Image 1 (cartoon, one colour):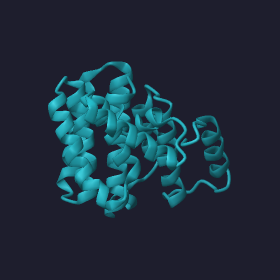
Image 2 (image 1 turned 120 degrees about the vertical axis):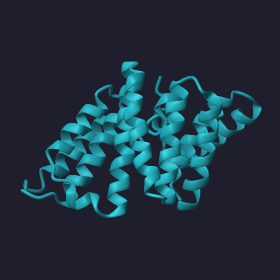
Image 3 (image 1 turned 135 degrees about the vertical axis):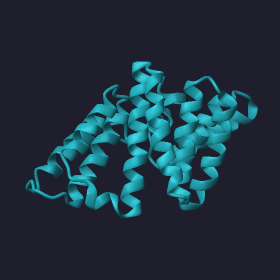
Image 4 (image 1 turned 180 degrees about the vertical axis):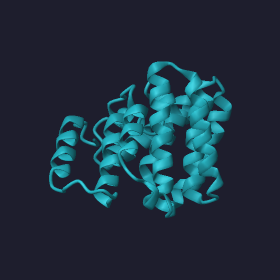
Length: 204
């Protein structure tokens, strides 16, 4: 995806899936397939991102992977972004209640990564509700939580979005710095890549 090749990513996912047999219980490969396939939908700005993720989740018994913190938080965060992408592309603000519900679950984890993810989800919600000041503050709070954890794709995407939101000289510097950081990491199209994380500010 960083190389702007979602078709190649889809082929790699399909090839990887062909290498293991279906089982009655969930295994790590199935979880990774869910994460990779949904990320590919998000990169494509697919209006059906939420429905596709829900369908994939419905085919799996996720209980064994929602007990540990890391996979539980990862799935919540990704579901929130899938819901956001669908809300943005379908222009359906009514879907934002579900995103808020996901953010509340993340905040309830009372953990740095979960709090940061929740703040970024809420920043998107605020932006879709025409609340730019609240959106900017939520982005800032999210970056404070996520940057020490080394979650650079979220951090740089959030900064790029914040710079675009501000629209002033400081915003321009934020945007250019974030774009350069993503370029260094091999991202061919920073705005498109960042829209996976901040769709309300970058995928419209």
